[in-house]
Image (cartoon, rainbow, N blue to C red; front, side, top):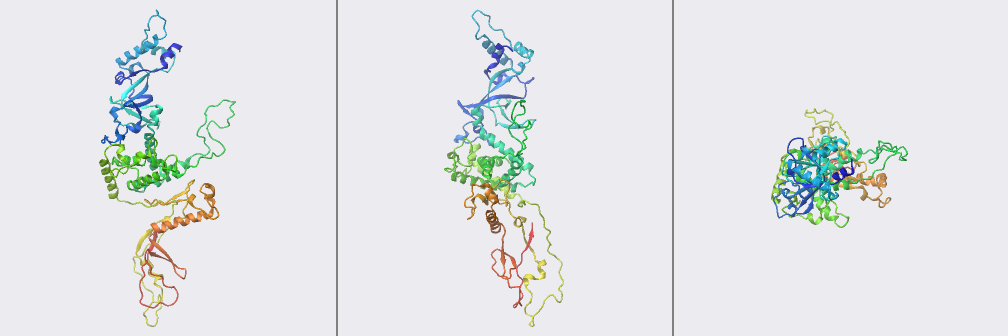
Length: 538
């Protein structure tokens, strides 16, 4: 290609409005744009300011200042065929190309007579794929959409008032920085859908809390990382290149990946916790129902407290999204989660939240904590058949007033009614997930946590920063076991364990103070039936 031809292709022409594009014919239904940016009232903006979950209805709210039909989008469009332009567009582009072709010509030389058809014929004849580019501008019409192409890659699609769809191939730096929250929100939304879909043990929505999502992320994403596979490597290499890495990226030695704490993972969810709540309650569609609404509301309140606590402790407060100031997250009583910034009105969001909580409360729940180890114990069921009394089963005193056998050890134990079930979790030794120093209670809606780094002993002193020392210290692990067992007994098991003087162990309902009788010696007094509890493993 000649230098003169390259000069004609160097810079885009324009700008052009949408009426310069053809309708129908060979033009694709979705046009690709590069170097995209958006402007509102002469100011560069991004998708963080234009995307709504409900139609904007509060003009007094600064977050709703950018309405879609007042936003203009700019981008570079490559005209691969002349037929993609309308007659008006072809005439305008040809005029601009002739104007550039005339630049630098000496006086007296004939003016350019270049035509689009002849220029594109020259490009085809010389075998070059590069085509003429124009600067295209249009008015945004509706919310941007994250769509998945045939290869499974998600792309950004923007629609115009002329009912055209544009695929954003790359964006201007300012536009990308001002759209980072939009990208993070939908990236997190589709990640949560993937965790639900690929979970080995499917859980109902009532069991999907923030702890469940963090646990599934560690199991499905974090633990599946190939420690012998480089993430960045070259697939082409010269013979004299000293790099010993194979072209496949596999290395014989183990790669030591950066430790990712659970707080970092929870922080990603905390950044967008209010948006995820708003996205779920904005519609009753099952496609957006990801988690238990009631537990997520509690999680949002906890995030708000932690934001204030870390205000002066970290360079950036924990749980605060990009391009967001902590001062902007101070919400009113009528809108405690600031949902009005996602569109609609505060009263509208309050009604939707109330309806979502009512739907969750009316739905029958059958949630059981998931055991880490599948295990089942056969339990003898209570017999309904009346047992026959053997003549020599009891020994009576001379006055026949008292039984000489202890009612606690009577053979009528099988006749006791089943009072409650004890979850198998109480009979398992608690363990920590891989590369995680925080233990979270597996009961739904329980936020009890044990941080191993906060446990110190006289032998270890302070080992908050020593990851290996925490995991290998028996003294710390024993304290961890004691904390977990104490929590389970106090909060989730409504039973007390009593040890008699003869070292016999009894389970009594919490609050009962009747001491067990000794198991040796004759018993006097009227025979009485002790309240018993039969425990069954769940």
